Length: 239
Image (cartoon, rainbow, N blue to C red; front, side, top):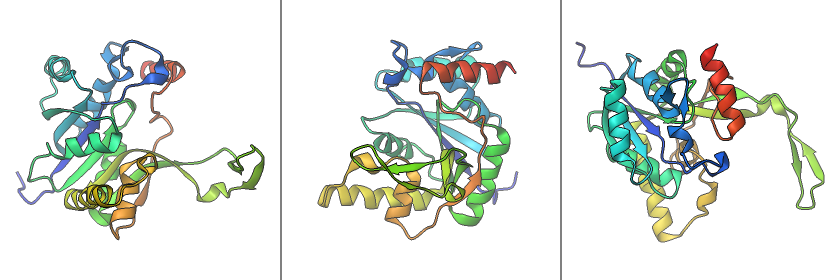
């Protein structure tokens, strides 16, 4: 084994409440084609040779259930299962606290994106080596307009420069910890509009001097948010 090979840890985010699914079962634990939604995300990283360990972040009270799921499906790379918080970025920070110390790079992935491919994981692992920060994304194909508070269109944006961001998002582990430490200090000292913290790339962009590289994503790598998304994902999996 090459000890100089970079070590990648995946953090699978599965701590969301899923209110738009209108179900008593959280969407990440809904069964789809024989497995919970989140199990497909874990499986993709479990089977990827670049990934040495996985941290799973789940809702409060779901550690025992999630542990049983990982044992049942043979997810041996899951080194830690930790509880999330009320905000996504706080849940990610909880996950970062469980990352093995010898990790060089972390890939953060939404547990409700079950269609993530090994090829996309490989691309993120490749580009983060060169840039320290990269995110999967697909070009925006719809016409996008900006509107005023009264609902009237004020501007049509140039879609050739717009990207729809997906996950994985990959970062140098020290860089991401630096960004989060700066963010937490800013919140303590000055406060901040936490609603603007929509992903980890935003934190790196605002709290460090590192530029985030766009990596070609996958149109099939959808995020399950509504019941309709569940039907689409099931069709992809069956296909």
